[in-house]
Length: 313
Image (cartoon, rainbow, N blue to C red; front, side):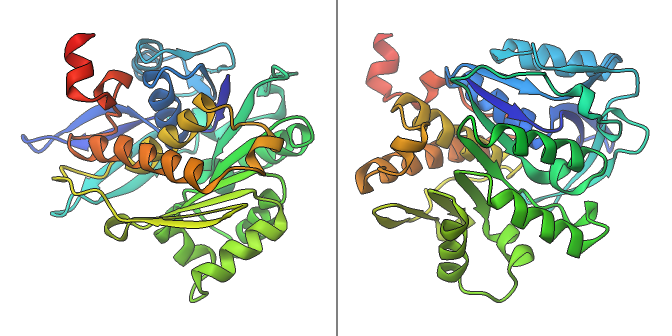
């Protein structure tokens, strides 16, 4: 199983009438949904409100095959993100957290133990930047790092960050406790402004990450592992919007790692060039499909099968 930790919220997405549609979202929740739809056993570790929007989130997760055993119940309302999509389909977000479910994290919300054979993925956006959630998830990472593979997507949201210095210091600590890092080019511009990509990737390897994957939009993907790096061009696609594309990529990456039995520390440190290329290619396909439809609507497993196989099954 892959346990995904972080926020679960509702995106308020503009509709054609000038209003907003409530759409289940949150980067970690999107990643868990993507994994569940790809057939990977997945559970979400999050705080979920006991309100109508919380019920919407719960139904969305359940129908996407996400295990809900690690959800913590919250009496506060559901966390919200108001989404603005520009003419190129790129999304911007305004968040409402204070007094909401994700604003009330406590260490007591963490499960006392996780299955010994599970991997842990942490989505950074809220967990890295928003207190007290950040302190709780640092406790989780410190506790689980000696016991299992941990993957991490910083998913930097500058609008959430009040103290750049504190968040960068926390990020450095977290990078010393994770095995796989997926980061976007936009994230890197905030994390290491002006620094060459190769220098940052090398530094993260030195801190302990076996694999570093950098998504660069139209410029494709750079991935670095124990046998060197690969650079893959972007897949041509008619973009409707990019909402959830990075989360879908992360889900595809993790699903491919899991399917190929790579989510152990021993196997991650021996990933071959071919394995890394195949894994990233699969993740690109998952993200590309997501970009062709509105919102964080990641594909199901059979949507990635060749047409002739899909027809037979």
